[in-house]
Amino acid sequence: MKRTVVLALLTLLPAFLAAKVNVVVSILPQKYFVEKIAGDLADVTVMVPPGASPATYEPKPSQMKALYKARLYFAIGVPFERAWLPRFLAQNPRLKMVDVTKGIEKMAMAGHHHEGDRESGSANGEAAVAHPDPHVWLAPPLVRTVARNIAEALIAVDGEHKTVYEKNLARFLREIDALDARLRKLLEPCRGKALMVFHPSWGYFAKTYGLRQIPIEIEGKEPKSRELAHLIREAKEEGVKALFVQPEFSRRAARAIAAAIGAKLLVADPLAADWSENLLHVARTICRKGE
Image (cartoon, rainbow, N blue to C red; front, top):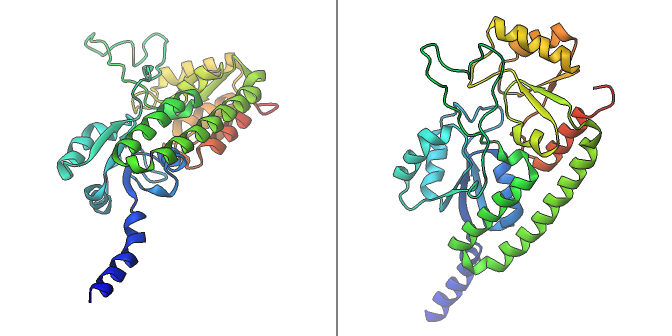
């Protein structure tokens, strides 16, 4: 009888040892980062699926169930977190909330700077609130900090695998540095170039690689006719040949500007799952000959 029990326990031991850390993240690029560091030691659930907006997304019941089992939630500052993180903690008080942007100095979201723009103030004279730009994952040097924060949190809840996490982190940091070097080489010929985008997601990317981001949409609003006319003049003055849009946003205003200046409408997805290849693709598109 005792021998049977021992054998049964030995049979279950591999499954026990292979238990994964249940992790929840807000967006797909974070899943890429966690898997680089945790490998097969973590089971990652992503809140915002492809094609959805982190500004307006509401979790599904199945995702709320995953949160109940989760040990870690890696927050990155996207808008839906402001409303939902307190609810996630109420759902699972044991959940450890980790701000993966800790240690990063964030910029304000980009705004228009011409007379009468939306960020010059409200109709009653009150100054508009400049929200921090959450898109830190689009600048590889900042992702080094994100990666370290992820590794630190994983080690805190799964210290048995500290050596694995540290080894994977070191490897990932080398990959980030290599990617950064490739992006700098690709974008060097285009330093100072205007990068016209629909949603102001690419501010950190532009700052890192010497580009200037010109956004169309500000704080979720499309430009009014006066602003649209200014953007068209600015695009012509800057010689903009391509206008970048995101899959989850309306393209009406972007199409109007592109048609007025004879520019191509191209997709640049800041939420793509393959983080490194996506940044290389965007860099090649920005600096493509003739663009």
